Length: 521
Image 1 (spheres, helix red, strand yellow):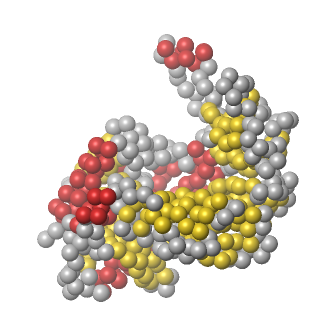
Image 2 (cartoon, helix red, strand yellow):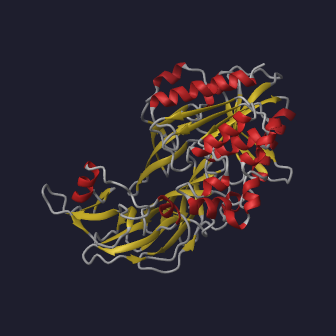
Image 3 (cartoon, helix red, strand yellow):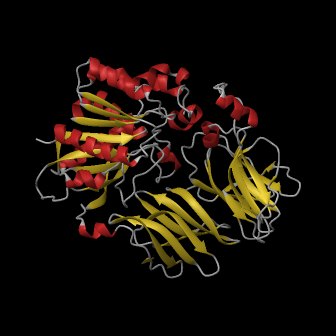
């Protein structure tokens, strides 16, 4: 990251520790073994006047791994987020917010925080810090909006009773924040008075967006927004007159491609909890005809499926719809966008009522005569891959085909081999596996391998650190020894997902063929 000071005289920037000369020499000699947890590389904070050849000075020597920073209005202070270790789990769970005077370089913690921290921003007068944060260490997401004096104090939660999830905010003036949130299957944009916490919604005409900016002097907005008809494009508008003009047209060929209808639907779990999801119809849908159904299960689980552009390489929704499938993307309990309580709704109960929310979606659509409940498939990545493996084992009688993408098959072997040991235990399970090993094993797909009959395609990146490839291998050999049709595809060089174009194309073709083989009559 780099950012000029408000007075334009200095440039602050972060970059990671480089290799030392000794490390470079050892690498050439093949003496570059790693001692786990030692000699870690920190991302540090530097300052310069920005002219060619100028000195680049480290602001402080303390070992803090910087993840985000922002200047105060007087150009004398920087507020930043950091952890005491650059390990992934620490950046997820144990960040703190600091302030530092760029002259004396002594970082001080601004306030007490607990759990995940999202975006930070300082008011124009430099007095107030706003940040997205967790309400406690078990909160799955930094989904609440807090303010606190930059000089320190007790943070105040402005969204304590909000049944959505704050994702980002920017200052309009010293007393007003512009806030973007996820609310159900949509994004909600609003103007908030920090004194009262009251919000005034800005109608963004159904556009879905995460990336945006505002010119405080005139209220002009720019959005990188998507909709069911197009991926993200640039839009401009105003908070005083919210009529948005599309400025870019990056995918003109979509004008000549028929897209399937999609809408937000609701159904209920047997316990009465309301569940939402995005339903995409078969491209040439005929009323009264029953179609096969494919679930596309988001990961996290602290994420949400939104009613915008849903098609991407690992979730090719419109591709499935064009092939004649209903596609349902459920926001099961544990998802964000419905408040903190809802996102904690799967604690100590992974794939319990959470998965029953999904099964209730099948029953709802089958009850309307829209889908054939005997031809249901599911797929997803990461936590969505776990739920797909759960479908293929524990609930095999309900699913005719499954695709597990980078998913968990055995929670006990997973928990101490992943790079998110603390996050997984604190905000996913809210339970350490050794405190209730029987429950953790029971919620593992491998525990139900004798019940499995569902043909399963397993997709995994060879270099995955989040969900090690051994998780895919465990399920593969479990199903294979049971004589169930299973295929494991390892994508070379890939981590937690598939980033290379050729691999993405192969994945889309391969998964569609898998569903075509088992879900079509």
